Image 1 (cartoon, one colour):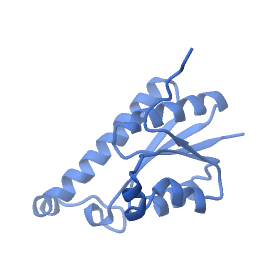
Image 2 (cartoon, rainbow, N blue to C red; image 1 turned 90 degrees about the horizontal axis):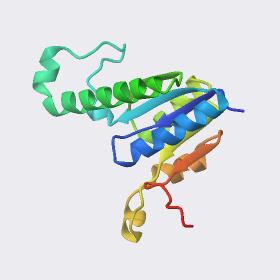
Image 3 (cartoon, one colour; image 1 turned 90 degrees about the vertical axis):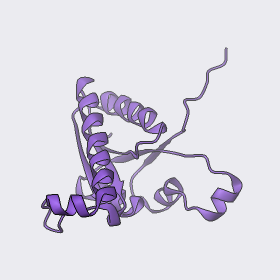
Length: 156
């Protein structure tokens, strides 16, 4: 059913649970898993042709350099952990708005599903902040699996 699965991560506490669920799904279907972390384009120093930033850019824009380095490390570490579980994993850091970037990556990689986490917003938060999950569910042409922030407790 699933041959390629995209998993969106952002480094929050729930990312570990999201990756665990995505890995289980990938193992069950013997699917490849592609990890994506979207970074605000204002903090993405790479050139449009894909060239890495120069040391001058990193010195002039330390916050952007740290944001990119954190995202690179997060994706790299996640891919290594997945490979240690015998999952066919790859990853990338992409610049831009998360929903658009996840949809674009899913399309470009011919993914069959997207897995991502859900943060629980207060009623005020739901009025003032847009939900990546909600928007992705509305726009995605492929199945979206939303993983709760905390694993559901089991009651006997």
